[in-house]
Structure formats: C-alpha cells, structure tokens
Length: 91
Picture 1: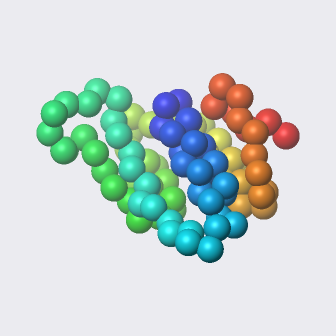
Picture 2: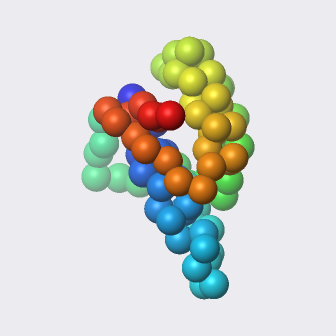
C-alpha cells in the first residue's frame, strides 16, 4: 500500500507542475519495505510502465494491488487534478 501512496503523491506533484513551462519528468523510485543501508533495495525506473512491469514480476506484490494501480493510472491520465484520501482516489 505504501508503494501506491508514493505513486499517488508523485502523480500529484507531476500533475500540479505539468502546467509549468519548465516541466521535466522525474524518474520513478520504488523502495522496498525493509530498507537497508545499501542501494540494492532502491530501484529506479524511467517510466511508470516499466515500474508496473517489474512489479508484475515480483511474487510478493498481490495481483489485485497491481490491477488497482493500473486502474488508478488510467483514471489519472484523464484528469487535471485529483483528490486522494488514505491512498485511495476520490471522485
């Protein structure tokens, strides 16, 4: 659930800055729950699609969470602003 919340906050930043003339997309970072001092727990992705593809291959991520993330991303693409409460999109 933390990953989903992090993605939503990233999208809210991207969409709020999208109208800016100096918009630059930032790479997406996925950080595992049990973090350690080394960098092996941090994965950097250049796109959301790449991150989702990697999450689909991870046996520790439930399929329903991935489907919910995909559904949320489709909804986000059509909006100029979003509301999130407890990690869930509000219509």
